[in-house]
Image (cartoon, rainbow, N blue to C red; front, side, top):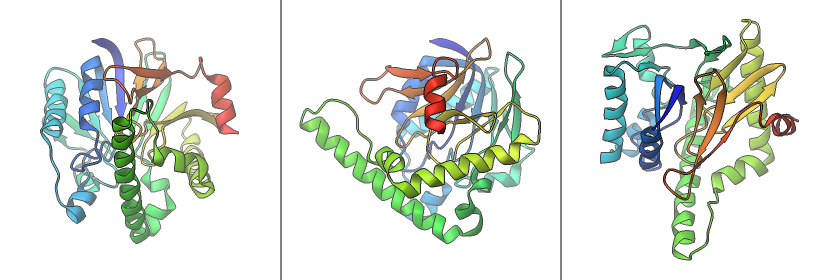
Length: 268
């Protein structure tokens, strides 16, 4: 097991068939941390209300692992998102050893300060046109189901590698690319005035680590399609981890220093 200072997770969507809870368990077995930040949409009350509850043994184990870590001294901070917004009524309270915040400022080991928030308040569709957000959620769920079918076919045909239909759409469909860019700029623009070093969020299921308007922007991604997370190492360095889609225990990581040239290219 690898010791890190902090783990940042978002958009797990427990309670849905698309949730990759088994891969999340593999990830949690690999990393132990002092802090665990749950950055929204951990439990998908939206989907459970509309499509019925799907709750597997692996999902139970995920919840049990988080609770166990909290009991054993890991500081667990939960920032609810729009899919688990019912829990925003309990901001300022604690569920056992798990504390709930609307947003949270985290100071890394090297003294940098990052705002943690889910991010739905900077999504104009979710904020002002909830019916359209629900429609979009149905469309995304359909794409994810198609992706699961394609993955099954690729495995049975012996085609190596992992290909994501949802990820392809995000990268290639002009509207999706524009939406992601607008979201990132909106988040940074609203946080910049607070004198922080950056922001760590979720919501749009688009893992990222880049400089936006002079601030460091991190998006945790999701555990529906990409299986990504942010890690803070003991020296304060933040890393975007892409958990391997092929073999349990394999992963790729990126840090701002190592991938500065790529970050600048992506931000262009």
